Amino acid sequence: QVRLVESGGGLVQPGGSLRLSCAASGISFSISDMGWYRQAPGKQRELVATIHSGGITNYQDSVKGRFTVSRDNAQNTVYLQMNSLKPEDTAVYYCNARRGGYYNYWGQGTQVTVSS
Image (cartoon, rainbow, N blue to C red; front, side, top):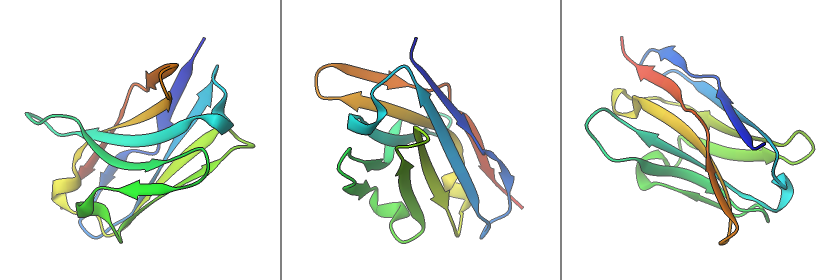
């Protein structure tokens, strides 16, 4: 059974930081491309950051320099360090695991709210 379990969301003031985690099970984590996406109310889900199995990272322009995606293959976990958070970062953040045409899985999401 495949499980992607996100944690670390919450309420933070503008300029603050949060670290999201996504623990994966039931997949070959080390050869999976992992990603973080987000969906704000009334908007489509959008890519935030990805980290490929080889470690190459990719970021949405609006988070470059503020967010960092990383992975720990020994722990089957992917992280998203979010600094200098802005109200527009408020969304449900989802973890994604994919491997070419073989599979594409989603976590249940974790809420991030940036507000004073």
